[in-house]
Image 1 (spheres, helix red, strand yellow):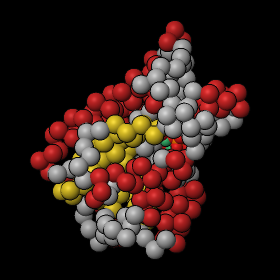
Image 2: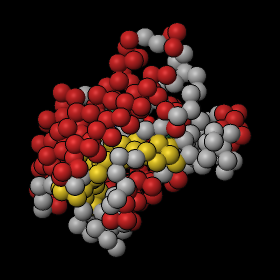
Image 3: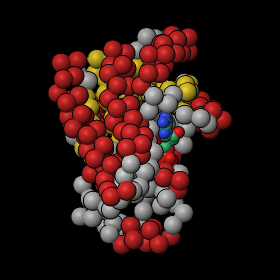
Length: 254
Ligand code: NAD
């Protein structure tokens, strides 16, 4: 086990991709703090699973779309770091939390746009800014984007544009944080069967067939396809990977 004393903060770690990331980070010997929005019980189950692996874990409530709450969150994070982990710093930030939102361009409202903007870009930007002073030299940031920044599928213009903004932000992070030896990378999953978008893909067999038809490996993704990629980026093996976008999509729309 490597990185035994390192700590990763994963937003939206109570289910779906974030849960798998948290568990796979623990498999790498990294302690994990997850955030959850409303489901404290789910978060506690993830903590229990991590502790069963012999690692330390904690959960904090956070609405990643509410920038005005971030100062309070940072204070809570500092408290839990001090009380439970005996440190003032973390090593990795994984900006994973996100919501689905589908609408043709002609029907997009300002309210719909702003809801996605707050969670997918403004929240990611300012949470990262506020967590940055707590990240140790040699640490890293992993931002979760989407295959939809490369492949245009009608209905996802707002979501995909915001994920593209996250990809650009990530390159700037890599550039500006190089002097602190902090790396920043993007993982862009393809279509994954989670609760995302109300189980949009998981509950629709026709959509699953469509995704399978244009995916080289012939199936939609599952959460367990993604966590290991994020965990790898938080290891010494990835120390020279910086400012990159890694698509984990089974060869979608090649
Ligand atoms: P999910 O719905 O299963 O989980 C989303 C997580 O984000 C949950 O833990 C939820 O509580 C959290 N979250 C949502 N809104 C939040 C808010 N305002 N504040 C705090 N937490 C919030 O979805 P998922 O598939 O696990 O998605 C995780 C990430 O992966 C998202 O960023 C999503 O855009 C991205 N992604 C998903 C897919 C897919 O097909 N599932 C594909 C590409 C990228």
